Length: 147
Image (cartoon, rainbow, N blue to C red; front, side, top):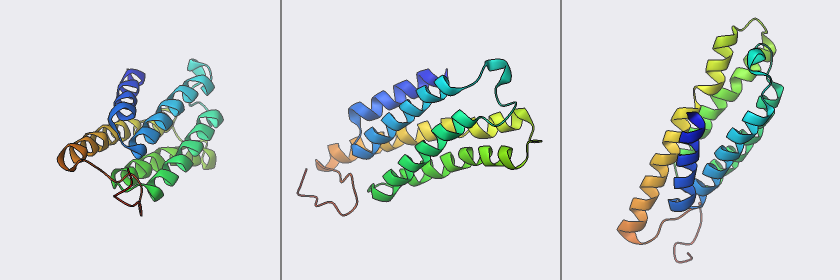
């Protein structure tokens, strides 16, 4: 179910969003696909530190931080903060292997849905600004006369 939602949201962002929405949509889509590839056997999921998933999450976090720092938008900061919380679940598991398997799974994945929602909201708002004024800055300190 999540993959279908992610694919729809990312597709919408890629088709209708500005550069921050397109890049975030692509990054989220690639991260979701990569996570599916690196996850261990289903019966073993989250029974230990999910190293492959943690690496995917750390790479995605770096990409999202870069987008947040450059984008002329506020929503990427919220999405990055939520993803940082999910990535922190790996740290909690690494520090304390006694973290309950279900808690680890929930904490690392639960933030994905609000992040996708923020991407959709950001894309809708970008589209509205384009319709209202004919342009929308993608990156901070960008000259609005250059499109």
